[in-house]
Image (cartoon, rainbow, N blue to C red; front, side):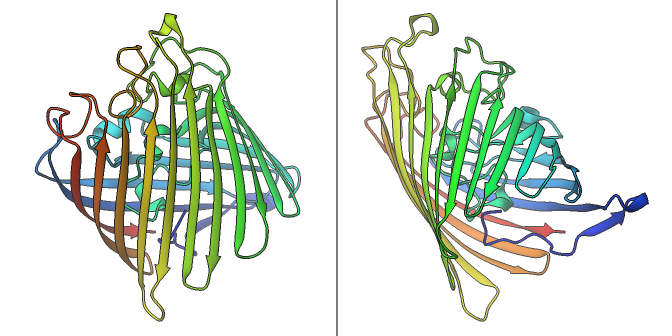
Length: 355
């Protein structure tokens, strides 16, 4: 959970026999509606949908632990057509995250299953983030992968190493690693590196972006700040896909992005105001046969999002306005119904319960 939304701190729980600990049951049932202009092909002028109808079952104590997340979910993101609940759920299935965890001590743990990514500052599901729609940088990142992960914590440093199938390709050739340093109670610095160690010459499903799944580098530098009513993150992202004639990449292509996410908790109220600004630029040319990772080779874009929210107990509501502006685009690959527009506005609302 990135915040400002918070999960239920007293979820339903069931004690296991013989002192084996407890199983906790919680979840998210949320609905959203939005309008956009211009409208992507396949989108509507106005859309309403369940953004989450999920239940979480987990065990968080003892040597052996687990996490199960089941249900339907949508995946709204800026600058891209909307992935509705049924379509998004088809990407990772009705059990999008599920893993077994072995924690022999407080410093070391091992995980296996369908794991959340280590990359990026935003997470996959709407309730986890400051904003309803994920950003342009999130569109370039892995989300859920199948694989193995080891975690180690020593004092202020926490490290993780994940071997997986990257963008859910089914080929286990991705490696991601993260190291986070908690400088003090207000400041944290994290470095995340990842990439495809080989070549994946197919897209196993609609969940797999062919070009991004062949990134040799997908790296982040993330700074987090928390103090009083303020919470902020600034992060840099770099990705590179090398030239590869067998894959149809006539040139290498890279993307460089920067994002800032800020939340302000209004004192003595249940209200928060969250904002995000980001910029992303890519390299490569159409003439050289560079792969497209944005709105055509060499294109750029920026976005701005503002999301006031309210939460009382398990109930929340929030509204959002966002804009995306693109430049140096390739006709047919940009915004709008024909991929010819360079500006898009969206207005959204989301409400529900985190039980």
